[in-house]
Every structure is written in structure tokens, then in C-alpha cells.
Image 1 (cartoon, helix red, strand yellow):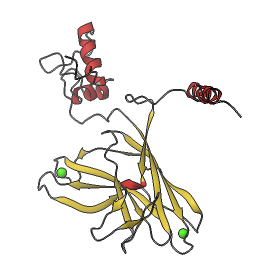
Image 2 (cartoon, rainbow, N blue to C red):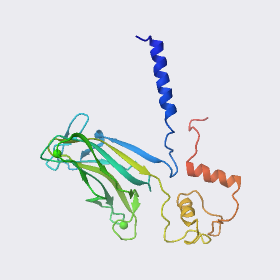
Image 3 (tube, helix red, strand yellow):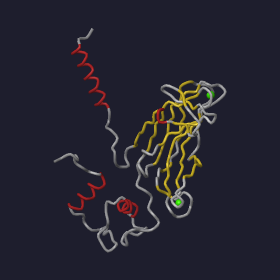
Image 4 (cartoon, rainbow, N blue to C red):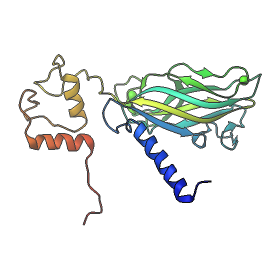
Length: 250
Ligand SMILES: [Ca+2]
Ligand SMILES: [Ca+2]
């Protein structure tokens, strides 16, 4: 039997070794690290107003439509949703759980909501009655919250969500999203006269301009070959990373 101090020492040593074994935390910026977002069962709600749900540690719709949805608008604008793992339970030999990822939108012209569900990518489902299991989606779809979805050349407001169909003795327990930031594809029209669409850095200069990190060098140009001063570097870095200091500094 270990004494309390000895136990504590073992525990701290274990924590330290776990910490040392990890490479590092994913960055909150840049395109090099995938982002991981967990969606608990508590986030899934019936998509139909008459529907309810049951379950502790998991959720099953009680409506005859059996559908539950969870919003995933916490994914950064412009990131690509690479993978969704739904941790589920299926104890029903007759019925299977089905899971998907989709989008709704609000028309920017009329302001009306569009309730039509558009699934993005293939659906996945359980098979047989495996008990605790998972289903996997690999959508590889960019998450863009302002984009023209009805083809009228005006960007609409898009909302993204997970959806599960939980008939019989099946339930959703958790979902894990894997996403990656990216530098957006270049727009069709150039912002700066001296960085046209065929410029080798066109995509990246456009990304800086659209993010508000640079307004160019004046006269509608960016001056791509001009040297960067230390002052300009400070603006680029501070804006790009959203650098700040505590708000309560007197
Ligand atoms: Ca089944
Ligand atoms: Ca539109």
C-alpha cells in the first residue's frame, strides 16, 4: 500500500510522462494541423417540432421520423470537413441507424429560410446489431458560411449540421469532427492591379486582402516585390493571429 504522498508522486510522474509523450497540441492557426471538435449526444435535438428524445449518455428520437440534428457552425469559416465519426449504438436486428452531414441556407435576397435538407456527401449506416459501434463519413467538403446557393449571384447564409436517423433500438452517443484550415481558392477577379490572376502568389495575396490583413500599398496595388518593413510585419502578424493583451489591463 502506497502512502498518499507516494501515490501523488506516482500520479504526477504518470502525468508528466503522458505530457512528455505527446508531440504538441494542435495549433489554433495555420494549415498544418487538423482541428478536432467533439459533439456530445446532448447537442442532438429532434429536427421535427413534434419530436422528443430519450436516453442517458446517448440519444434516440421518439418521433416517428426518428431524426436528430446537431449544428456544427463552430468549424472555422473556410475549413474543410475531412471526417466525421459517429459513435453510436445499434441493438436492433431489424432497423439500422443512418448518419449524414448536410446544409440548410437562408436566401439573402428574400430573407426566407429554406428548410430543404441538402446532404453533402454519402450517408453511412450501421448493419445488423453490433451494439456499441461507429459509422464514418469522409465528406471532404469546405465549410463556407456565406456562399451563393441559389445561383442569383448574391451570397446566402449557410448552416451546417450532423443528422442521425435513430429507428428502433439505436442511438447516437457522440460525434467527432476532423477539419483542416485552408487558404481559400482564388476569386475570379483580382483585387490588386499588380497581382493579376496569373501571378504566382495571387491566391495568397487575395487571402490576405479578403481577411483584412492588408489593404495594399495604394493606387489599387499591392506592391508584391517591395520589401516589408518591420512596422508592416507587425501589422501582418498582429492582424493574422488576432494578437491581443488582457482586456482588463488598467
Ligand atoms: Ca441494426
Ligand atoms: Ca444567393
